[in-house]
Length: 110
Image 1 (cartoon, one colour):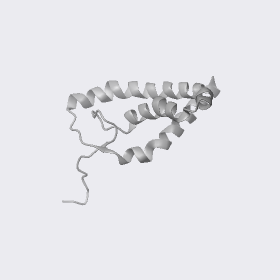
Image 2: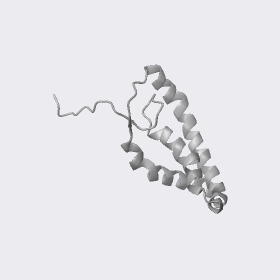
Image 3: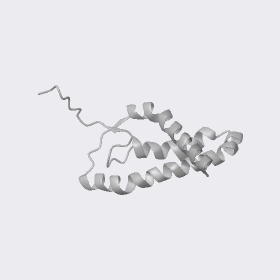
Image 4: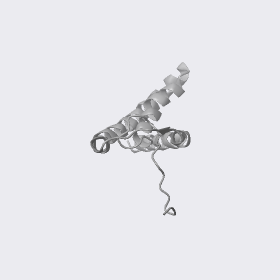
């Protein structure tokens, strides 16, 4: 059981690092409400994190079969990368994955 837990952790972290750079370059324009942000933080993000972990486990178990079928990349994108982007890259309360195009406040500007 400990070996499976370690394998899932390594697979999850590898997937997160693989898409972090390109996904952060994408920007979205949304103005979510306070209620959307609260609901996202308390309900959606924990559920999406669970979906990412479960997707990682399923992807790991199904990897030999999807590799033989030639669609391992598609399976990884659907089960791991998609939920992980929605969990970690999407702005709080936004509906699309990507960083918000809000103003950047520079501490040196007065």
